[in-house]
Amino acid sequence: MNPQHPTPRLYLVTPPLGDTAAFVRELSAALEAGDIAAVLLRLEDADERTLINRAKSVAAIVQRRDVALLLDGRAEIVARAGADGAHLSGIAAFEAALPTLKPDRIAGAGSLVSRDDAMVTGERGADYVMFGEPPAFRPPQGGEGLATGRRPPLDAVLERIAWWAELFQPPCIGYAADLEEVGALAQAQADFVALGDWVWTHAQGPAAVAAASGRLAAPAAAAQP
Image (spheres, rainbow, N blue to C red):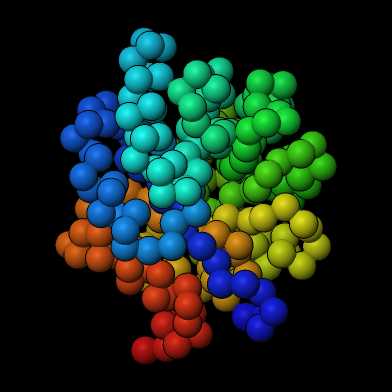
């Protein structure tokens, strides 16, 4: 790790939620367990008013801790839900959302299947790019990982992050598929490390977030057997 590169922060990804009220206690404990920069809220389909109310209930928990709340897609309800922005999967979704989100809210880009895709979103104003997310985050057609139903190999994700960190200014998020990947993503100079569904099902519960924070602070040590 470049000694001048700051320690990455955590980016929490919720499971797809219907009943957000039932998730609030678990989310609150996770937010207390580590240095969380943002929460990406994934919502199950519902009518627009229900989606807005669910997002507002989570925003009340997240934002009072000075943590940003992003919606997975659904850029059209970001402002009414009081969210800070949206995470868009693929170039088409990203470009379509820009007029709604900019200049006041965050527009993050993921499901970027090539270096060219990543550079295009960066040039068009992405506030961050994400690499290594699972197929659930990917657009319905085309793209690495869709044919096999798997995310790109970790080595490919680390290479993409290191390339981005060396050449570009917008922050980069590396998606950790499990606790063991957190240190490697930090060493590759990701600015943020995303923790997904495995955090919510981990045997340690919210303590898994604390463990991930430890890997960020000392990734080289954490990577040793």
